[in-house]
Length: 256
Ligand SMILES: *Cc1c(COP(=O)(O)O)cnc(C)c1O
Image (cartoon, rainbow, N blue to C red; front, side, top):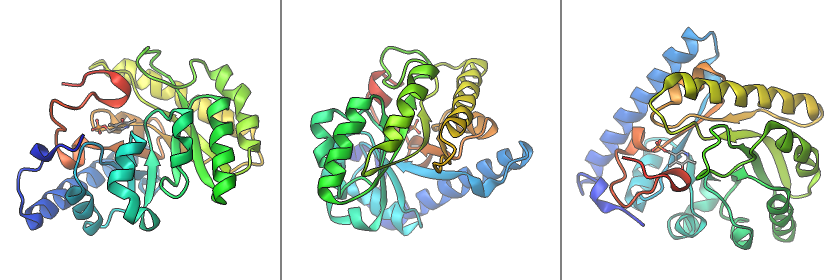
């Protein structure tokens, strides 16, 4: 659902100015947090999550210099990105049903939410047929929340990883997680820390692969994620404002 109410103005110059301002602020926070944590700030990328936001927001975001986007539903991504897919890096960050995998090649360059070998194998076939390579992350359900998808245990993810990495048409690059939906920073940090350890274990299990992406942290918890080693943060609200009441949040839970 595209939520036009989240756009406070129809004047695209003002929208651009708002996004530029928020982007600058987020980049400043990432930089300061990384430096304080002894990390290289340039090692952290921002994925602009545009779900529920209209095309005008995406266009303004591109004018602000962003070219890495995230959507959580394939159908919505088709509606908004089909004609610009070749010009941007588009990540599918939400759960992908196997029967929608055929829609990914030519649209999404990245699928950050691989949660089973079956899904990976189906996506692999589709990518081979389309003669494209899709970069993928394996999703870890670090919070244990039932509404979230992803591998339930470190072991189950690591067991599947060599088989995912061996599939043609896919390039396994790392791990993605969604932090627990809680104000308790210690719990969130703990989930990110476990995911970081899993990411390091994945590198050990696959020494000949380029495992370089740890996607964790959203608008409410990206500072914690940067402190705990994220190389990619996925930001919607921090860049574009609240999504409004139609939004059900990442993978099901009702947010605000
Ligand atoms: C919506 C969503 C985000 C962005 O959420 P914000 O809290 O608005 O930054 C990040 N990751 C996933 C998987 C999402 O569905």
